[in-house]
Each structure stands twice: as C-alpha cells, then as structure tokens.
Image (cartoon, rainbow, N blue to C red):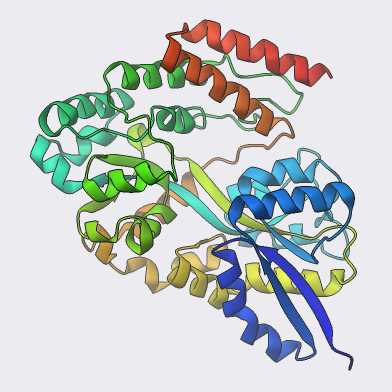
Amino acid sequence: MAQQTLTVAAFPAIDDIVKAALPQWKKKHPNVEIKVVSRAYADHHTAMTTALSTSSNLPDVMALEFGYVARFSEGGGLEDLSQAPYKVKEQQSRFVPYAFRQGTAISGAVMAVPTDIGPGTLLYRTDILKKAGIAEADLTKSWESYINAGIKIKATTGAYLMPHARDIKDILIRTGVQNGEGLYLDAKGKVLVDSPRFVRAFELAKKVRENKLDGKINAWSNEWSEGFKRGTIATQMSGAWLAGHLNNWLAPSTKGQWQAAQLPEGAFGSWGGSFYAIPKTGKNKALAWEFVQMMTLTPELQLQAFKSQDAFPALVAVHNDAFFDQPIEFLANQKARLLWRQAAARITAVDVHKLDPIAEEIINTEMDKVLDQGKDVRQALADAKSLLERRVRR
C-alpha cells in the first residue's frame, strides 16, 4: 500500500497528546503517517481562521479550544459530524453531556467532538487563609462571604483575593443559565445581557474593585505567575487544569500550599476544553474520522492524556478510573479530582451562538468602564445590550 499522510493541526499540549497516541495509530495504520503541525495557542487559531476563510492550507483534523468552536462552526467550513458517515450522535451518551453540547450548533449540527474539559474550581492558598484566620467555608458559602473573606485577607496579609475583578464576572454570568439560553443570546437571538445574572456579576465585580481586592492582573501575564509564586494572590477561579499548570511551570515552588474547593454558592461552571473538528475540504475524511474517534473514544488514551497533561477527560467511562482517587501532591495530597468529577457532572450546557465572541468583547469593554471609570452598572449593561442588538439586526 502507498504511504499516506494525515495532517493534524494542534496547539500545546494537544500536540504532545497526539504524539503520545501515535504508536496506537501505527498498529492499525502502518502506512499512514501522522504529521502534527503545532503552533502556539493564538497562532494556531489565527492560522485555522485564515485557512477556513480561504479554504487553503487546511489540515485533515484541527484541534480547537472551546472559545473558537462557535466562531468556526457558523462559517460552514467544518463537517457536520452528526450526518453520515460520522453519525457521532450515536456516541453522545459516552461524553460529558455539557461538553458534547458545546460542540453542537443551535441547528443541531455537531461541528466538533470534545476531548478534554475544564470543570471550574476555586484554588486557594492555605498559608494565606491561615494567616488571615479564614476557613474554606468562608470562601465558598456565598459570593458575598467570598468578598468579605477577601476584605479580611487584604487587611491581614496584604494579598489580593483574585488577580482581576473580571474573574468574578466571568463565572457569575455563566451561573444560572437556563436550558435553551446561551450566555449572551437565546436561541431566537434575544439579547440577555441586562438580565439579573449580568447585573449581579457586574455589581460584585465592582465591589471587588472598590475594596481593592484585585491586582488588576491579566491571566497569563508575567505579573500573574509572579503573583502565584510570591503569594500575593490568595485565590484563583479557573478550570481544574490550572492546578497542573501551577505545578508544572507557573509556580512549582508553591507545592503543598494550595487546595481546591467547589466554586462559591454552589456554582458550577466550565473553563475551556479542547475539541477535534474535520474541515469540509479535507482529502482524507475517512481516516480523519478514525483518528478523531481514536483520540476521543479510547479510554486508555484519554486517561494517558489526563495523567501526562492534566487534560480532564470528556469521555465519561474514564471517570470511574482509580486515578481519580489518588491524592495530588501539589494540592497537599488532596483528592481534588473527585471534586472536579462532581463538578463536571453538575455543569449545565450553555448553547453557543456565532455572536458570542463579539458579545464577550462588548461586555468586557463595558465591565472595564464600570471598574475603571465608575460607570453605572445598569447603564453599562443597557449600552452593551443596544450595541449587541444592532449586531443581531445586521
């Protein structure tokens, strides 16, 4: 048989996960070479955007981060995996329900298959809490008690409660979303950004800033990792994967000083997650589909990715593995994966909309006006709503 090549475009750490799975692929397809095209996270998604809009230089399989799934799925450049020959909906029950929904367009077309998820968690510094005389329950009882605990932490230790006030807004707008609603718009295109969840999110973020509880630090900046290393940030709400990043490269010297908890007030939210999609113009669609199934439906590969890269599995069967019961040394031997598994089962699916990226930009701009210029919360949300409604009417 002639040698064939299947091109997979990915970003870190998906590229390493794919490379680690190659021996398994080779057993089945000795004549099919997998070429992994790896780029930095932002560069990868920019390259995929360009490739899809020009229908050139497209890989056979592309990895996508959740934030880009809606954006790409509306463009019509990806295969609908619910249709024959893929019929991925026959496998739907095998995935974490909210993750499968995240790859599904409002029309019901499945544009991408989940491979890993980011169940939300609250990571906190036990040494800072101890110094401030604060217990975990003070952080998690309610959003108000979380902020009050932050006031005490700041007064006694000088540490910030969170890197940026926007962090609390990001989780609160995702809390209490009803079925059939999206984050910013519902299925009929009705704009939701002046609803009670947005009002509360903005008001609590404003309270965080007024009490000087955030360092105005953006995620992934040098200041952010320095804050973790130096103990000037007491808590961080994020996906469970952040514990792995802290351990592996962000702040390994802080091992044993962190613990994980569920989010305040019984909230459950999702931070990111990775998916595989197949471009319509691909030449090797049958092989591409085999590859996607191998990566997403093989329990041992999903578990291997979890163990090596902290890629929390989207495949439900893996959630019963004994690995979940193992203590995590970085988190002072806490069995935190059990918490995260519980969160994964409780997260509600939020419908994605093609205008989500624009809506997010508009909301963040108005949030900054509230935080930095003292703009009235309701006025900010009313302005965001009218801007977004204008985009809907276009």
